[in-house]
Image (cartoon, rainbow, N blue to C red; front, side, top):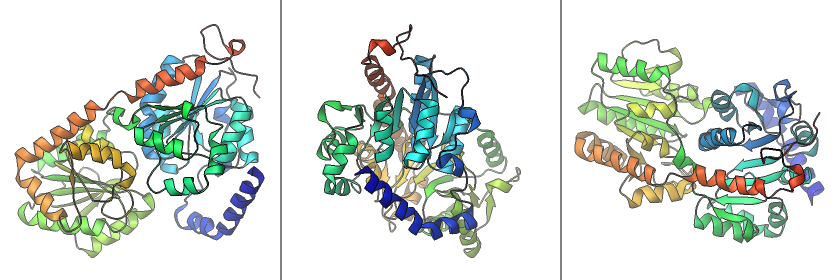
Length: 442
């Protein structure tokens, strides 16, 4: 099975090579970390002290945010281990390096044996923790055969991926047999894991790590903007984050209506993908809306226009400035994005009606009247209603913060489950502190 899968994967990469070359040329996309993806071990990962390794994989920004508390907790609990983090995307890589340090972060290898084996040989991880559902067949097989315990945490099976997993259940069952522990977000995710072939005895309910996201250290830009807004009586402030193609035009039309009643209003607009920054800037020009690019802003007054957030890693903290937050990927059929970051600050949250990728989180908030869900036609009206009703806006944000606090604790449950998994290791591989010893590495 695995050789056939590898052949199909190689053929797919070969056939799509023109696309990758075009993305290289246009955006520099996927160029970063190419050597690491192909199995070249960066020098920073070669640890002369040969500490045993816990390897955590987080695909992109959302997963990096989710595992942040887990990384710090594992570093504290297993102080005689080295905890390293891999990501797939460049944006996830940048955020992971900011949070965990350059020397502990690298790009996840492509799912070929020639790219995976060098990492297993050099790191020889005792434990591999995978965030959500990155079921790479070759990686799981080789890591398992290399002696690593494998845990999938914050596990979720989306509505979109479930039919495909079920269609190939016989194959998926073989792949998932290499995983020692699944920590599902919800009972529904647990049921779906069983349905696609995970061994039931290895599944537990861990909760959603994203509810435990700590408020990060506030970057300087937040206070700079706060002072700039106060200096010219700017307001109200809308923060529209993680927007996708087709959403910005709808949001900007709604914002034009807001400017009629609130001429000093500001929208902080953060497209999800960096390669779309220039496209959104062109749209703002076309609509004759005054705007400032965050990358070029030097402290001048901002009011009656849009701050285009064309930087990475600042959006989460900027929700603190919002009177109303809109979380994108939801006005178009893209599945939505995480609403927890604005909830951390007690901000009134608005989303579109396409939130399938976060069905449980949005459903919970909706059940507690802690989020507004709208279609494109209702969007301008809901914005205006919230901005004109201070009491309702404040109450909506307060309920969001209370809902978030009520769900915390997944990180601690995950650490405890991982500790139990590590404890069920033959005593011959245990060190004096009760932790596993690393086998010799290069």
